[in-house]
Image 1 (tube, rainbow, N blue to C red):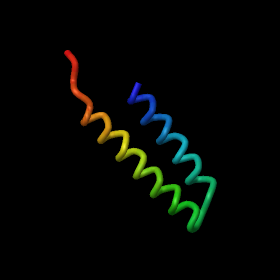
Image 2 (tube, rainbow, N blue to C red):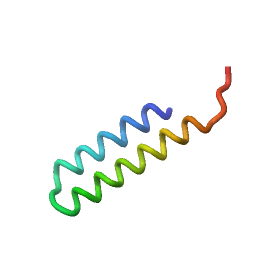
Image 3 (cartoon, one colour):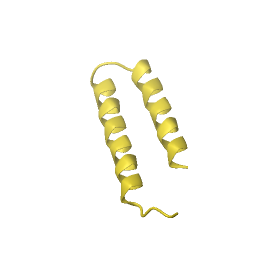
Image 4 (cartoon, rainbow, N blue to C red):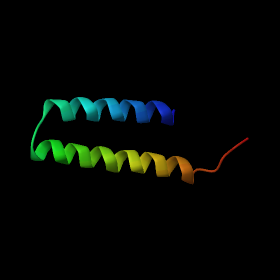
Length: 50
């Protein structure tokens, strides 16, 4: 489930970044970095079930 969330997030942010410029593009890139970091840290903090 988390892999699909990461792929979807990347796709949306790349599309939004391509369609904008200037300060808006910088804010979109910053939001993309923050959300991907949040997703990745959320995956590592969950206990692993075998």
